[in-house]
Length: 83
Length: 224
Image (tube, rainbow over all chains, first blue to last red; front, side):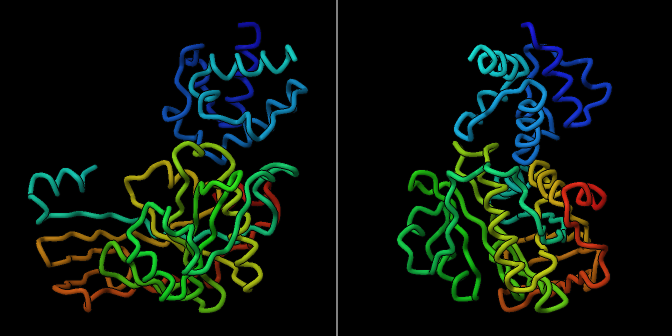
């Protein structure tokens, strides 16, 4: 996944994961596994991804599925970039 | 989970609840970036509103809340019920354990309780939208802080409230042995023994003298 590392960096910066970032991979569970990732943090992550990648995320696109794993989130971003 | 285990093992004669008592400042700015959450409608309802029939709560409990003067904000998406948030602008008589919470100073501090978001809409924008409207309502009533109790075992809710700038006021454990309730708390009255519903401790939760109310998201982070 081309943008996996960049998405991981955005996630880590927003959630202040620090060295825990290093253990995240494509299959790492996010929602329910990262205590920092609650409904308030999801909004912050979406905003940061929009700013980092120049994408626009509609409210209806914010779903639990997109945040299920790091791979899912990256795939979501890559789909947005592909237009 | 501990409470469920106790209930199961004791066939209902033993129950345990542990609550963190919190206060959060009423935010003066939106919790959401501009333009976000506009598809979610928030409405203040009255006790006879039909939507209460869809609440995942006993009807008697809903009616009791309204009779005590509580206010209910309900979230809708495309006309569908997706969540609610309850507020009391005065004291609150708990309906899960025997206790009365008295937010102070009166008229400047409220009580929020039972924030519910339908499962399919969790981790979306419903929670911050509910709180945006709650904060607006509280500001209209000159309220500066809102207190609440959160289960000490609910790390998700504790985390979410921390992001709202909540501060700890103390904690309380309610232990039930059959009809007896034993209360142990880190704040006055510290200990209380109750054998019936008319006997309960009162916790005065005073936010007087708490720090500056955050007016920007950057300020908010300093109170977490």
